Each structure stands twice: as structure tokens, then as C-alpha cells.
Image (cartoon, rainbow, N blue to C red):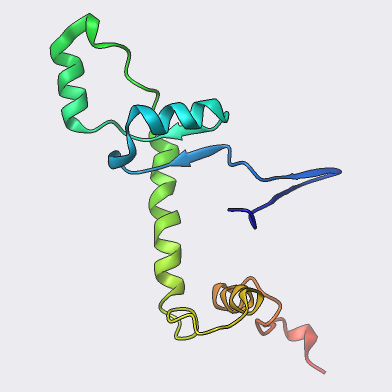
Length: 125
């Protein structure tokens, strides 16, 4: 997490995420309170058992935590990305000795690195 930085114009890069999408398994009080203390929005659906218990208790069951379904849908795309990258032979086993070499391999495999060939016809000599 220390290597993640979100660039902003004319300011220090942001290192804390704005929101964290997670599975139902991470829907507990400790995780939610930790994220709340750090000012991070938790996008975690409530498990069916918690929802049923809250409904059974009625008004004394408490207010359910906020949930943004659209933001949670993005989680599926985020989880598929590493799986697609591991389909490349160089990324999957991670034999690299240095971390910057591994990050460069990921850049090339994802198509965002400078090692990707240009497909612009005007670049040809």
C-alpha cells in the first residue's frame, strides 16, 4: 500500500483511498469502524444473516450501514484485473529479484507501460 499514490495537480499525491469495496465476509464492526476513523467510505454489503437479524429485531435492530451498489459493482472489475495479468507468463510466477522489474513487467502486460508497441501509422519511418 505504501507504493500507491494518486496524483493530484499542484498538490501532494493522495495515498489514502476514498472508498474500499469488499466482500460480505468483511462486514464486521471492527473493519467498518477502522475505515470510518480513517475517513474511508466502506462499500461492503451486509450478509443475509445480519439483514435478517436486523429485520427480525425491528426498530431496535439499528440502522443498516450505507451501501452503494454502483460502486460495489466496480469491485468485480477490480478483482478480475489481477487474474487477467496472471495469464501472462512473466507475471504469474514472479521470478524477478527486484520489485521495479516486476512492476515494469506488469506495466507491459497491462498495456500501460512504455514497452508497448505503437500502432500509430504516422510513427513509421
